[in-house]
Image 1 (tube, rainbow over the protein chains, first blue to last red):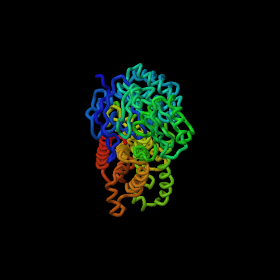
Image 2 (image 1 turned 90 degrees about the horizontal axis):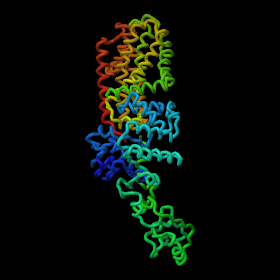
Image 3 (image 1 turned 135 degrees about the horizontal axis):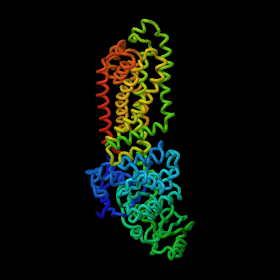
Image 4 (image 1 turned 180 degrees about the vertical axis):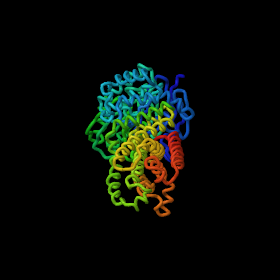
Length: 328
Length: 257
């Protein structure tokens, strides 16, 4: 078995609302695969289907060799998950949370105790093991959840936004754990994130998801080739209709919601002098210039016309998700 | 199945130990009933006429099994409904995604909650003995047995309800609408026989009635009870089996979101 996850035309509807609109992808064994997309893109819904917590409306998903609808128990035995929202018992201690998890996954005795000790040390929580979880910081809770998810040695590990809401230092820390897990156990990891740096740093392959659909898939390098060009960001003093500068070296132009203009060029460093000339000719004043090599954000922008962290109210998915969160 | 059951029962007991001051604080409410309500009225009813109405015993003796049953009913129902907090704080997902028997998990939880509830009920009983003059000491353990059946039934009911409920607002509503009326309609505070016909009808279909009556059998004696012990225990057993079964079925089918 070389494929840890196979998903074919997966659809999930909530009433009339289609959260996942037919996604297909494969994740190889031992690979870190990232679902990258804005909030409300359908990432968590997909994770919940793959982890047997939601029934798909249509399509098929096989995880660790078993169909998630036909054999949910077999799937559950072989997966671990760190949910986006906390899922610890806050009243209990770190040790008790680990112990309960171990027991319901069929571990016991010395074997369980040894694994608990090793993992609590791995995430550097050993000295806090007898403290109630409610006294833990967000980062400590996350680390405990990671340790807990590894206790039964899953074949496939799901990490749903593992570093959301954490400070940069803690994020870097958690990335280290994730890399160590992959290296030490050759574990397959399915990761969702809306942080481009996270996807780029960790994932072997990335699927970009938006509005319930995968719009691109490949390694970070492959995805960046989709854009191919450098992007120059300009802040201009010009009438709206003149903002999109025309020129033979300009491959594409978009006006961003914040009023800045994004120009795609082959080589920004060489294009800049020409750009200034062009602006001069048209009587447009350039207030600010920045440029950079393509990032995954540019890929997303290129494919959707929006930035990945776009959470504006006109994004119906985001508000839908917020509504659902409040309802819970 | 057994692993899930014992683990979840363990969790409920651990939570109880962790939060014992809060959980023990919950017996203050029934204690207020017993002392301020019970002791107050017991002076008013301290005459032969009243004693006849209450089956030949003093009012506190009549009331005590009722307060015990009320305590167990309230506490077990709140414990069952507290599944909604697991939903809120996410622990529910951890249980649902585990490869353990879901029926076992929720049964373990209900048993764990019932044991905690019994501890609370036992405390109330112990505090009641010095107040109510003719309570039987020998009735203590059998009364706890009645309490256990009642507790299983209402923990189970609470779990099913919480799984259906979407919001915490609904939770407050249900508590208000259910808890006090069921207590008043159970014969815990005044006899069923003197109720108006329509109230009597409601009392007969109120499960709490049979727990109050069962507890009276053991704590006071058959003379103050309305139904036979067989009826009381039979109704409670069937009810507990049905409601726990319902909770297990509901939990088996539970999804998130």
